[in-house]
Length: 313
Image (cartoon, one colour):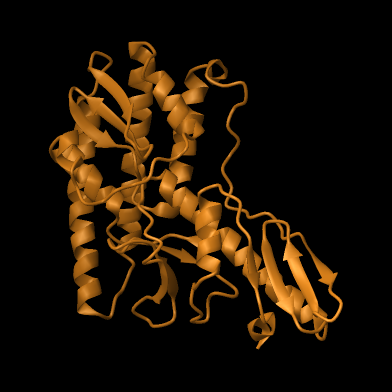
């Protein structure tokens, strides 16, 4: 299950830069995000950008309202957090202070918008949606990686209750889900070469014997499920505008020494995930990372895990 990571996020820093300065303030920044395929939310925003004043006004007010709600919820929940280490306490305090300032600014902007305001809607190279309200920019990106898609879905649902979204797509968007499809795999017996368990998305585990077959199959399926969850979560993070640095992707623990999270870049953004195999202090090493990177990019991938017996020890 994907949980929410409470820490200062890249999206917050970028949004602050856009809100307090201009879109050009971050154009030359060190963070780069690969272009992503346009989601229904991005496609809807792009088409509303070309619509009349009323549709742009409705989209902007709904998006701002949902953004305010997302940050206020995260701010309120963060008050319950307790950290033992001073560094973590300072980081949380700084995030709460910046979040409060940001929410106050958003509320002021929301109060000043009217159907006569000049509203533009644009998407940057990462697919993030930027509103320009009377030439003041704000990025529509929430504070929590795991809930970015949920916020977008709420904006879509509310907007499409006011306007006929069937004009924008032959198929209306279905609610987002974090479910990962079940593993489909099978055994293949090889003469004098043991047996392999193979999944339909290119994970091949080579065993010397079929001893303890049920245990081996369960472990293979657990690994495949973890990897698919990881790929889905990273794709969601990319769609939300977060940079993924595959050379830095690691499993770390929070201050309690047991709660694990996956760090995704040098900024320290991370995902809290329940991983049945890669948890328990196991590493995310090659060849698994190479497979996940290709799958996250929508490319076919295949790996062969030799001496897979070691996975069930």
